[in-house]
Image 1: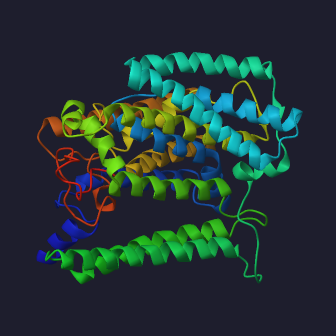
Image 2 (image 1 turned 135 degrees about the vertical axis):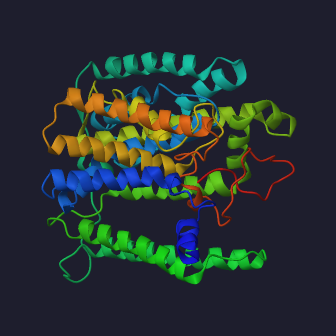
Length: 432
C-alpha cells in the first residue's frame, strides 16, 4: 500500500495523492484516445500531428502572452486585430517596397511593440481598464488592416513563408526519418533526465527527502516514452515534412517564458500584482511598469503569431485574426488560470490550448459542422472553468489550478498566496 501511495503522491511531483489534480492532462489523453478510435487511427498519424502543430501554433503563442495578461488581472481583446494589422503591414512592405523578409519579421515585431506600448500606456499610466482599451484596439486595428490592405489579400515571398509553413530540413544520412527531428527528440529526452537528476540533487542540498528512486524512474520512463513516440511520428512523416518551424518557435517561447515567470523577479512581480496589486505596490513592486510591460509583451506575441499565420497562408487577408482572442482566452482558462488573476501557468495554458486544438481537429476529421464545433468548444470551456470553481468552493484542491505544479519548480510545494517580492526573493511563484 505504501508503494501505491508513493506512486500517487510523487509520480508527477504533486503534494497530494488526489489524482484529480491531473484532470486536465487526463482530459487531453482521453480526447486523443477517443478521437484515435473514432477516426479509425487518423488522429495520431504523422500527417495529422504535423498539421495540428502547424495549424494551432499561433494560437498557443497567443496563449503564452494572454496567460501573463490574465495573471496580472487584465484581459486583451485586441490580439486578433493586432495580428491581422501586423500581417498586412509586413506583407505590404515586402510586396510593394521589396523589403527583405528578415527585416520584415523584425519590423513586424517592432510594430507589435509600438502597439503594445500604446495600449500599455492607456492601461498603466492613464488608468483606463484593459478591457476598454483593447476593445477599442480591436476595432482600431481591424479597421487599419482593411484600410491598408483595401480589404484584399496580399501575398508574401517564399523565404518569409518558412516561419509558418516550413519544416526542419533533411540533413545527414538517409535513416528513413528526418534526422534533425530525431536529434530534437534526443535533446528533449536528455533534458528530462537532467531535470530529474537536478531536482533530486536540489532536494538533497535542501536536506529534504527526494521522491523514491523507483518513482523517479517510472516518471522518466513515462515522459521519455511520450517524447520518443511523438519524435518518431514527426520524423516519419511524408518526404519533405518533419517538425514544423512554427513548432520550434513555440517550444523556444514556452521554455523562455516558463523560466521568466518561474525564476525571475519580473515574473514574480506579475503574479504579485495579480494576486493583490495594493499589497504588491506597498512591497515595492512598480505596478505601472508591470502592467505596461505585460500589455506590450502581449502585442509583440500577437504580432509574431500574425506573421506565422500569414506565412503559413502565403498571404495576408482581411479575415485574418478573427476570434483569435477567444481561442487564446479559452486556452488560458482551461489551463487553470484564475479569473481574478494571480494564478496560472505557461505549461497549463499550453495543455489547455492543446485540448482545444485536438478537440477541434478531431471533430473536423469526423466531418462535424463548424456550428457544432463552436457549440462543443463553448461547452468544454464553460464546464472546465465551472468544475474548477466548484472544487475550490468546496474547499478541495483546484483540479486545473494545481495541474502543472510539478513543472513549476524543483520544490514540490507551491505557496497558496502570491509571494512578497521584497521579503521572499528566492521563492518560486505559482508559475511555469
